[in-house]
Length: 165
Image 1 (cartoon, helix red, strand yellow):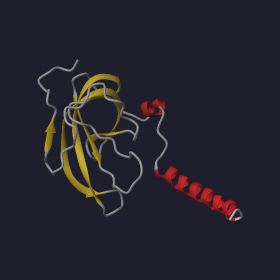
Image 2 (cartoon, one colour; image 1 turned 135 degrees about the vertical axis):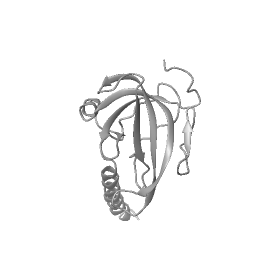
Image 3 (cartoon, one colour; image 1 turned 180 degrees about the vertical axis):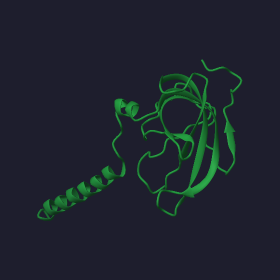
């Protein structure tokens, strides 16, 4: 019995390394704040005014359909970019297949105020979040706790009558 344990531990160690290596490949490293800023067209704190579900499209080169969204953002303060306070921006993103590991997408929830790094996508005529770690922690909480689920459905922030502070 004792002779089996050393061999078993070697097999377990090799299996653990193999699993760890595949998980490490699944999620790229986060960008540093400096790299995020360098690779972004806009660095700002924004308020999410509304989010719309825009449909279903294939994810990457696969045939798997995932949901796409757009959020209407109001600029609260600007650190970098050719935008002004109170200007509105459109940011787009796509869900990822459920079998992928890691936080590949960045969601924006109605009502939240959040620092973010954005990159212009000329093809979609909208911004995209620069990297998976490019959205900071909200400075004000969301007024909705979920995203729209049906094509064309819009969820609007509940306190739109108030000016951002």
